[in-house]
Length: 400
Length: 223
Image (cartoon, rainbow over all chains, first blue to last red; front, side, top):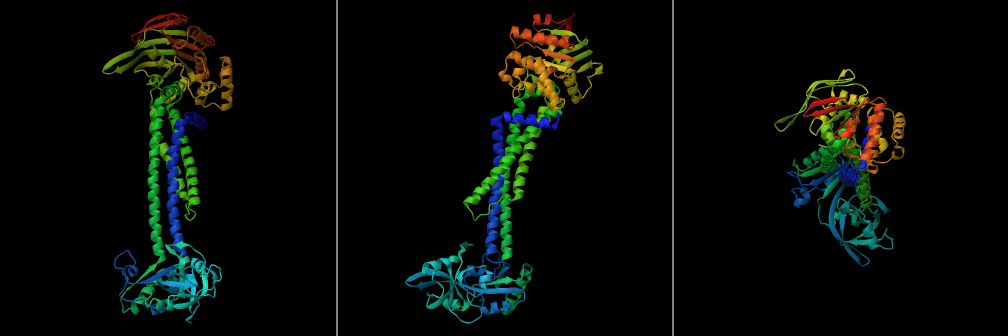
């Protein structure tokens, strides 16, 4: 019996046992679809997180006061007080390092913003003009903080704050009171929404020296540094640590973290998560494989006399084996293809429902899902096919 | 052309040995019309299965057309079955999913004959067995007589030299049975060796040679 006839005949068999075939194809398809959808979700989450990190800035190095002796936790934030302050002078020294492209010192606090009878508390960032390019922020209108050291009481508002205080849209050049001082609105940030749990639409940015005055502090919350290039990140990190150690009487009392490291960690964790989840989904494929085996065994038992007949009219064992083998192949092929389509449709619907989540199934997962379906189906058919081929024709004809 | 020498086939039922065939010696010439009769359990079906290469004797020698087929491998036996032997069963044994035409086509498919050629031969067979208007019907939609005609068409599509019929009319009423027998006898007249196993005396009497069996042995052989 040639290949084409084998495939045709087994295809007709698959089609004629409609309910049985549909159920198997469904089981297979769900397994494959589960792999595709779950990897799409996992990989989507990974891309989302990586994207969020990248939006914070590129080649970013962050210096924070205090030193983590053990892994985990941001020491400065957790302990509240640190052995030695990080100062503007520290930032100035770091700014002279050759690997550093630009830097922005940062202070954060909360203060009351009042204007025209309106009042609300806002998160205030104190920084310099460099914050804008380092954090990849964009302005909707006006200008950012002025360069240089000239004291000018400028304030840049988040888009929502600007809307709340100046509903008529006439913002630039308006005066507004923050705490006890008056500021001149120089610009409004473009709406960026929430990013890493921090809503840049509801902040106000003022020059760093005003912020230190406002919060009555001389220490910095962070220094944000942009290295010249990706390859400069590690040397810059070492140079910063060294420079600050010298300035702090030889004590390593600052923590220098790179966004790359954090990003790589998240990337690793989420990749592992995706693999794990797809592994779990693959188990359902194995279950579908066992289902195929069971159904094929039942088919052999059901069609015993038919197998006997085929032998009687001259089919060698190899033909019988190939027929059952081809039948399982059709079933798993149909299951794999349906599952592939189903999975991609599912991922598409997730993307429709959550546009921020780039839930694209990775190519390797789709391939692996379909391949696993084919392999399990084929492996599962080996035993039933061998059993059918081994049947004794005389006994098989009498249905035993 | 069929030559059985000291053919023995033993079945084990529990710890009991049943000699279904006990040192059978039998020669059947080309073109003969033979009936094999005997009570159930006499070994007549086993004899037919051995002649049809479905069953392997435990000892003895079987020559078909001058070839010793006792020692052939499973694949070679399948080929001999396909090319030289046609089976007709009491239960018809049609594949329920396939149409009458597809059932008849099966041996051609197994023999690897090209589709265009297959169609010609199937059409000719459908005509010869008066089944043209039933070609696309499945077995469940056919009467008993039509089913057996499909089975005979399938058994003879590769023009075997030996046609083996095991109770071919067992599931048919008397009139239809007679029609089927007439069909088989027509094939014999065209030159095919016809061997019919039956316990119907009337049917057995129509053959030109009568073999009687009992307890695995031939107890009568008349022409």
